Length: 408
Ligand SMILES: *Cc1c(COP(=O)(O)O)cnc(C)c1O
Image 1: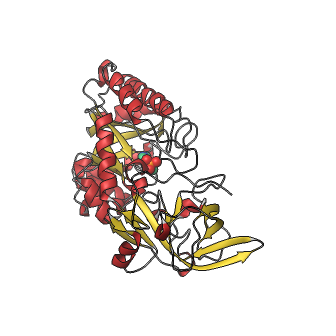
Image 2: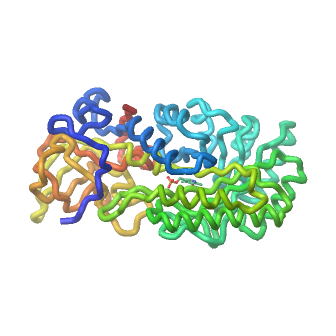
Image 3: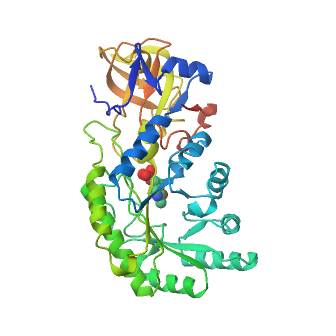
């Protein structure tokens, strides 16, 4: 037997079934038309935002990192809850505009921005987080051609990284951002070129569950921004401090202590380096805002035995939930939280492997999981499916096609 990850505690039962937003899993599948299906809960997202706002200093702006989940209805919903949006492509820019985000609320980071993306972003008036000296020149040229003043910030590749981070995105040689020591010269150059200078973006990692590591990274980010501003002799109007707030996916993962992070940040803000007194501070969060608010529902189509192991074969799989299969940035595969949604209140009685319908051994949803006895037709729920699910999985692999999505 292998343990399952923790089911977020706001999920309840309706009758015997898992309920999301007060509706049973089977009713949601009926409404959507069929499985596989992602269901995202408005209540869960709004509650998460309320708790976060209560814990953080008022001065801190909370941005949504759109790549976690770009589903249009969700994006429209979250637009009213957050203070800004972080995007990473021209495609996301278009979706963000359609969802109602205003250009001045949007910042665009990411390596390899094409000329057409720079043009669209500068024309719209969104902030570009510049990732290299070369990109800076292309942005300046584009703005000159358009005859507009671009809103530019510099993404810094910091020399430190977020400890315990699930995915390392700072420290050492990276395709992201400009190395710390070259930032002052570039900042000076951009300010001299007359751009609308927006400050720095310093992102040091993702999926941390240790509040001490986040507190330490935030202190490092603030100190670095102050030092870079001073060295360049430029103001720091805005500081995107990154995010990295993680969620519990696996057994023994404990939720992040946001109260501790909020308290530490209040202390930091009360004692800022002088050149950051007027700075606007933001964090950019993806999975923390939406990850636990989503459930992936898939139906059992076969039940079979092989060498003493029972397999529940579902109509879903890694083509929608690559992360749960263990093939999205993990070294050792561990089980996400999984349940039999149609028998949510029943106690576990057997040990089974839950797999997807793809013809590859990579397509696993739960290994040696303790679950109630399930039959063909029962619904399986994979939790923590609200981030890096539908849009971060190879939906066309083996001709399967996308899952349905529903915001309730
Ligand atoms: C992916 C990404 C995020 C969001 O990460 P989460 O772990 O989902 O919070 C934030 N900022 C940047 C720059 C990113 O690349």
